[in-house]
Length: 71
Image (cartoon, rainbow, N blue to C red; front, side, top):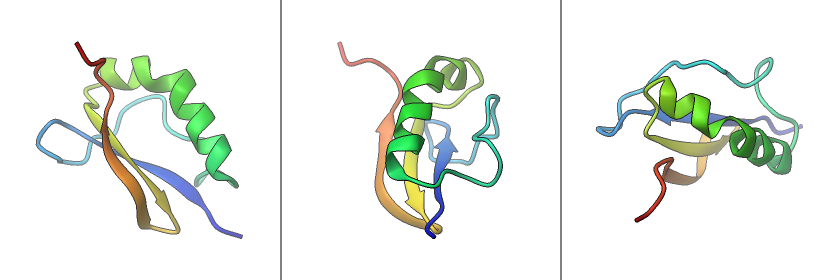
């Protein structure tokens, strides 16, 4: 079964470890990962995350996506 995870990065693309972190070792489905991000993005930004990429089994599916609202 594939494992979906988020790569959290600062504005320069460096890895950031910020709370909240995804539960366990990832998500069982893309929809679960995306729902979690929708519920957690404000806390991620507060923890220094500027952008995220979605990974499945360690391979990038899409991203990086900015967590900052567009003006």
